[in-house]
Image 1 (cartoon, one colour):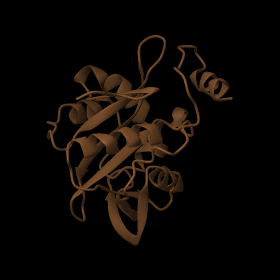
Image 2 (cartoon, helix red, strand yellow):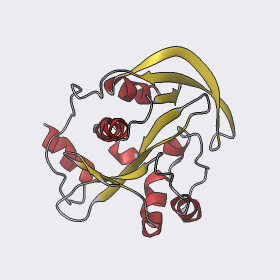
Image 3 (tube, one colour):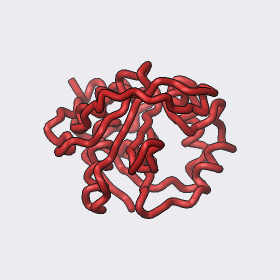
Image 4 (cartoon, one colour):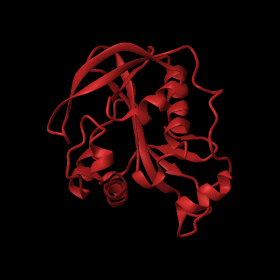
Length: 198
């Protein structure tokens, strides 16, 4: 399954993506916000992840910024079983691309995919020391449940407080994406994006 948004391409990961995946996710500030990714994270872990079978009812994608040239890996997202019950969505964005609206844009598309597949309403969560992820969930129409659960983080090596959310009725379509247009292939990618957003 593939999906396109205005700025992004969502597609399954392939083994050839291992070097790019290891580079994109291989930063402790990114991995510590995930439950199942180990730290340190290198090409070995990337190949293991990419080699796992994908349940058709639990799609997962790598997120690529569509550029004037080859798409650039900027993150990942997917649907998986929730530790509480049902299915939950998750996502991550490589650090150089934080604050550009990619998580919201990819998350919105993931919610639409879940609705098209007639999946039950999704849950989500974020570690409480990562409030930016909570802001993304609110933009996507998720609502806080008021519950905080202890969730194990492989990268942290222990439990951490996780704020729990449930899917609302919308997909966050009314949320504003900070930048419109395609991404260029210039060396200073982040500066290009900021200039395009101005």
